[in-house]
Length: 452
Image 1 (cartoon, rainbow, N blue to C red):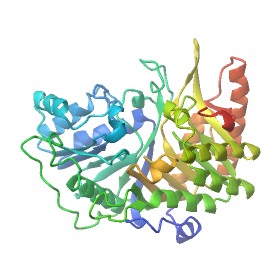
Image 2: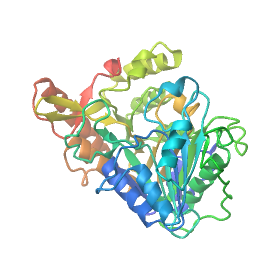
Image 3: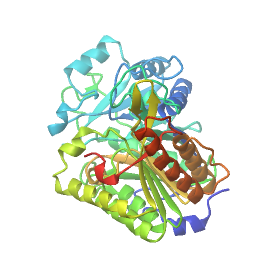
Image 4: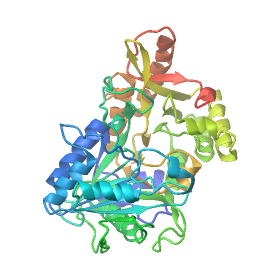
């Protein structure tokens, strides 16, 4: 079923976005890193013209599924086939210099790339004390074989986890990660192309020492001149968070992800299902409270062992307001906050939710890099793809609910499926307290205690 005009009226697009909704796309959500990175790596291996990637966080020794090598191996192999390989890395700046698992633009990185004989181009891009957080892959840009991947998955060992979240080879907060990316083919892919050219040509460190590789110089890219041909029946829109003045082409910046979330939640009539690493945006949580007052069911999946920075900065006014708004949702019987966990021989292991997704009413969904916190809306550079298609949105909801709830929801409508998932999560919370086996992964928690 192709999207109709009624969906765009009911769940409005982001009017403040640079790119409008585009018809004629193939959109395929890819849930969990083992699934997503298998498809991404296969696309890189099949590339004949270009491989362009935006990287935020990376563990250089993380290997891709199917016995493949590391990210650097994939880039070297593609460049060895005369494919135009360009990687745009985040360059941490300000207080972010202490952050781990990044490949900085410095002498050490240049030496490492030179030592391995890398022949592809790289540039580094900073955004003051914030993060260049987009996770984008664009293969064979501008050709009939163009395919884009937009989402939230970092390149790390824990991110290679599969849907069963089998025992990971390591332990720790990020050993087993649940995350989502999205494959896009069609006219919306040109907008991903346009974004990459803007960032590549305007990369902040490109003329600084060690801000580009190879040291002899890198080349700018031409802008796309025509929209990619239709490849499917889904309407999709590329939405972003970009600070004002960061790039010449976007002097006023863009804050369309926030707008898109708020308009979709305001339109919700049956349910809102969210998976997010950081669930502390006061404005989004207030919109969810309004939806709950209208009788909409709301369920959110978050990490049970969230990043420690949240508790450390709890006194920050913006974060404190988010904590208060989240705690207030506990007063609504239609709200459920849950964390995924796995029963091991020694006890329960948290599955780290790194996804940044939402589905509303089986009609609209979004997948991307944007966390639900004010710094992702107005600070970090982000990208989401939102789409209007009842078949694709419903299939995405089924895939998420079935994994987290351990039951089949294909025959259920969205509201019934989310209601049943909330019941399972509450039952799992009781089972976990008693040391029992879980059904699926989701376990309900008290919103007032999360990230304490």
